[in-house]
Length: 129
Length: 129
DNA sequence: ATAAAGCTTCCAGCTACAGGAAGGTCAATC
DNA sequence: GATTGACCTTCCTGTAGCTGGAAGCTTTAT
Image (cartoon, rainbow over all chains, first blue to last red; front, side, top):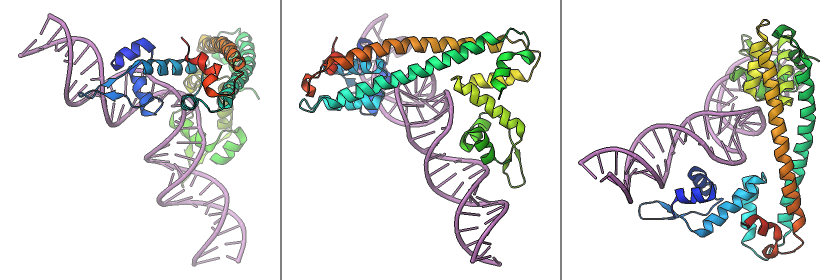
């Protein structure tokens, strides 16, 4: 299978697939005599795995570690657990920040009933202090 | 006042201040005979304004527009309103996404009671489908 | 024969800076 | 007068995760 087909099967663009190979997130693809990359089923699985991790907002570096860890079946599971909880914790922090942010923005959005910049209370708030 | 003092007053690093000048978010600073940048009160206000907008996660491009708009006191206020509501909407979208994410991660985090990678149910979930 | 589609590599750009090198300047100290 | 240390300057590189585009192959279809 050529790169474009792998791309359409997995929903990951050819550009991105090459990029993943560049940064060694994917192994170097086999090449034909013409220099084209050729892929197998295995590569579909890898890309799907990556895609799913990315949906969880994992950094590529972490995904790389997960991929590495998978090759040693006897390794302890703690690393995986650790990555997931870290991720979860970051999400929660982000949620908290966004919540504060929403309140601030909401307050701002409601504060201006004027028509001209010189009276704009949003800007006055932002300049304040 | 020299750049370092402006930095310590506003909490924005000298690097960042120079960067803001580069991208014309701040006007070109006055220079002494030695080439050093010198600043006034006005610059403190500008930087504080920028800092406050950044706390609201506004992109620098938007902040630039806000700064530009401020110089024309008779312009309509709608642009400012628009930016704020856009920002608010994005925050809400992000919140929704994070909420979904948290659920997914939570489900994953709870799913693995095993010890070895080869049995890890987190990885199995991630590979699934 | 030619055109279109697909492949390759490489280079630039996006955001918002931070780190560091190489070199000039200023104030204080010996 | 010389030196030290703290500042200042510009310029280059790197960060994350790609995307767009150029220049130049190959393959396939007409």
